[in-house]
Image (cartoon, rainbow, N blue to C red; front, side, top):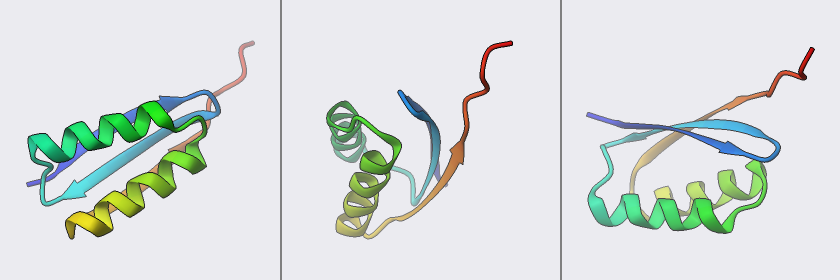
Length: 69
């Protein structure tokens, strides 16, 4: 099983997939990291560090925001 999350930052969106799925303590740590990050790159680095510490496989997909027309 896995946990999939889509997080919107000021400079665009990121989608993360974690295997195995996150436990409640891991999920709380991830939410705190998301609160501290101000850019996609900061969040991507923080998530990579957390996943390595937990022994999780974490995949990140980047999504660009479309300019309004």
